[in-house]
Length: 314
Image 1 (cartoon, rainbow, N blue to C red):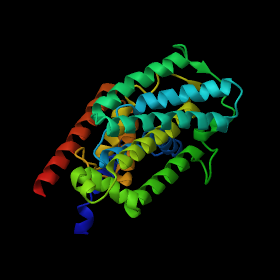
Image 2 (cartoon, one colour):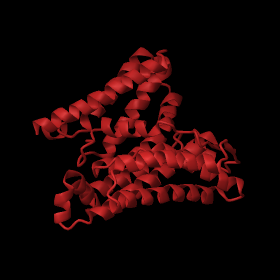
Image 3 (cartoon, rainbow, N blue to C red):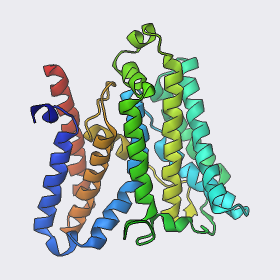
Image 4 (cartoon, helix red, strand yellow):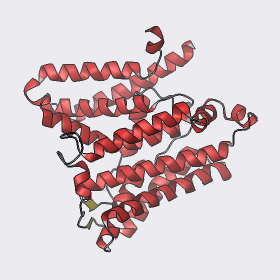
């Protein structure tokens, strides 16, 4: 029991259960409805999938501020491909492929030119947003989704009301968690984040690890973008502004350390769910949006402070 309490995702999980219980008591007639639970699951999917990729980035000691722009670019590429007559899965592949290409470039800039990830991804955030606006000619692209809109539609997935997109997020999370926990690559990711110099002395190709991590994160942001398009059914170059902050917040709330070397996929999912539950619960009890933002900000600050205290004790 004591060992489990040392796991950084335990505290966020307890907070999630407490917050869920609180809103269930305060607003039982609406908050506990099955439709509301499904809605919360659907609203968490985009952040959750992007947070899986961000977990890899933060654990290996990096940061990625371009996630929101990558998602927006993906919706534009998918809509453009559909409008050009391509099938839904080809369009989705084009969107994910475009996102993955941005990750490769980011990884190479960080490793080959030794640029700070914060600077590289900050520049990418602006560049990719501009590219998306250029492709869309600074307007939304309307396109027939050709079935992609069913990915997050209630009642269209497996095992009941949860849509296919939710199960995709679960499958991605499980695969990523197993990769981090039980593969050589996962151990290398933690090693680079804990001490890059020591990892290099141990024979780990740290540059290769960084490129793979940023590419994987971008690919997952692309998948999140496809699911965002499923919800919007348009390619919107102005979509997902600020999404990167939500994604980073989910990872940090879930127990990851911004110093690198620590974090888990399960914790990031808990963080994403916690933010969704807070937003939904505040809406059900009639609290204004500014109150929701303050509460979320306090939770993020508390999570970072808790991480500082925990590391200092070690």
